[in-house]
Image (tube, rainbow, N blue to C red; front, side):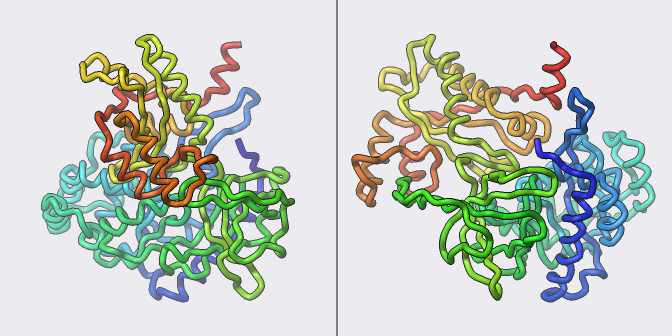
Amino acid sequence: MVPVIANHHEGTYTFFGWLIPAILNKYISGLDKGKVLHFFSTKTETKSPAGIIMRPILTSYYKSSQFLCKHYANINYTSSIPSIHCTDVFQSLYAQMLAGLADRLAVFQIGSVFPPSFLQAIRFLELHFQDLAADIEHGTVNPQVTDTAIRAALVNILTPDPENAAHIRKECSSGDWQGIIRRIWPNTKFLDILVSGAMVQYIPSLNFYSGDLPLASYLYGSSECLVGLNLYPFTKPEDIAYTIMPNMAYFEFLPVKPVDDVGQIRAEQVVDPVDLAHVEDGKEYEIIVTTYSGLYRYKIGDVLRVAKFYNKAPQFQLVGRKNVCLSIDVDKTEETELQKAIAAAELSHLRPHNARVLDYTCYTDVKTIPGHYVIYCELPPDNYSENSSFSLIIDQCCLTIEESLNSVYRSLRAYYKRIGPLEIKLVKSGTFHEVMDHAIARGASAAQYKLPKCVKSTWMLEILEARVVSAHSSPGVPTWSPCPQQKMASNG
């Protein structure tokens, strides 16, 4: 729940809107002569009991005059405004994909804000290319698209194009999806998408589908405020560093205690935050903002590392989220929240059968589309059972955990379909002792070792996967209300 003042978008997004094209034009020419296929996602907006509009910051921007009159008007997007503003996931994505396919040879740039939404679009193409090709062949609009404004916008751009439809069918029905973006949109110069911080996990999938197109990750921001720019947008993902724009907010930086590769925090003296002019090369900091909208010394939760300097301006690499152990899209599940969710599942489903969780750790699996949470659990030896009733109990644990997570996760899982069913993998008895032995052998302190609640090491993941005895997935979707505050208020 982040406050936004009237001129928030004018003072931030518009400013970046001037700078970004200037930066891109230094490296790629002719972008103004092509079209942009960007997959937008506008989410449902509601009102608080006091009548204040509540909506994600990007939804706010897409509906603002700054976007409609300046940004959208100055960039040749294939997506129509009605398709951008539609909150029905299927209709919005179908319309945007159809428009992008109809004019595919004119597309020079493809992207989305975050990789999960982009990969969702590719998966959507895989599932619906026959319907999309039929519409392109005949110049029609699928009857499942019922929004009249979307249909009107599509009818204005569609004409029968059997040759285009035949090419789309040929490429999509071959079964080979490697490099599909280059084959469908052959004039694409790069992908416009965030691939730093926690999003680096999606780079292999993006490279697979794009045929190794350049990845341009040039903007770093958050719901609280926009932060900085990547002055070298086509550098390798591991070298991406953002130059903070000091006119976006007042920025401070809290030094963080480094964590080694086996999860041990190195002891350091507690220090006070420093300002932008006093950060040190190579050090890691948690960013703190004081914004024009009224947030005062607010911790965004991102951890940054000073990578280099542009003249005297520090440039930061996005390390990840502070205290966040799981993230697929814009969801941010903290360790304490996951712990409470697992405890709720244990209490509801395991304890009545004299079963319990000895220990667990978690992992975000992005090899599937959409990605999903995986929780590795170890039960006492006498709790393991191969009968079907016990398997159903673990399945229900998956759903209860999902029900216990925050509304952002539940909305992405239940409504926007950007997160797949949560999975519990039961591991053999003694697995976490084996993990500890390996960690100690790699330098962890035997006296201070604590099992990391999020798997970040390849060697640890290999041990866990090798000792999985059964896998279970959520049998349903968690409940989600677009406005829990309003619902509580109406209930008195």
